Length: 282
Image 1 (cartoon, rainbow, N blue to C red):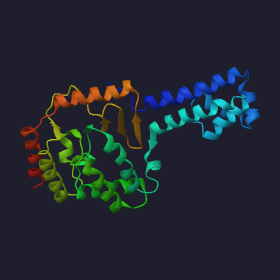
Image 2 (image 1 turned 180 degrees about the horizontal axis):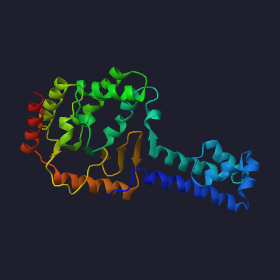
Image 3 (image 1 turned 30 degrees about the vertical axis):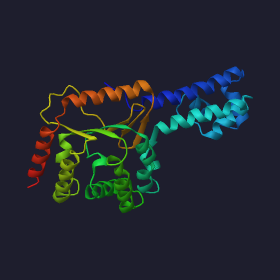
Image 4 (image 1 turned 90 degrees about the vertical axis):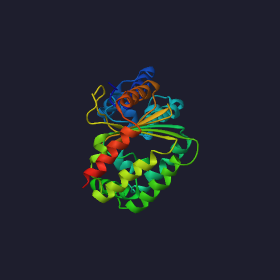
């Protein structure tokens, strides 16, 4: 079973907190001493040392200054920022709307050679039609109460999806059969989306597998995740995006993807399930 997608985040934040404690002890100071020198409440020192509260850049500078260790601040700030980037709340990523988030993926997509994407709830973004993306992003914007730039975000999503037809990339995509049955945008939109899946399967760079309802589950369903080459995994939670770069944890997602691949059907088997989903739209 893969570890919790936030485990590497907590470990990284704990490492920063432990380093703060070490710096204080090396300076032969108590928590009270650091608090007095930094002008803080004693409880703040405790929260920082126990990784209850992530330190800001200014917190780290003040801590190092209080411990006469200003030279250590830059590296510690870099480590703290790295930990912070592992777990990023959607409200932070989407505070100005959805368009910029779509555009932010372009450099990652362009440099990735092998995409491995597992989706348990929606059609993968790279395979979405304009109508499906409009309905889905509209729902997301409404739920998260973000600025309404859905039409611009959809255009950006369609633009970034050109990577599937351009450049030297390979795509291994897996969806649970339920994804084919969830009506996003209504019957007409779903018919168009499912028809597009049938056409995209013809591309030599694309492998699309469907995990049937009837599959003997040797691997349980997980949150939607993507693995870019073998370097980085992204996991989509309700409240946040988790970026995983620790090799051991990326390896867990690669292993999970491999297990899902064994459950999926491809080619004629996948087309049959997509066609059945179209027929079920009535």
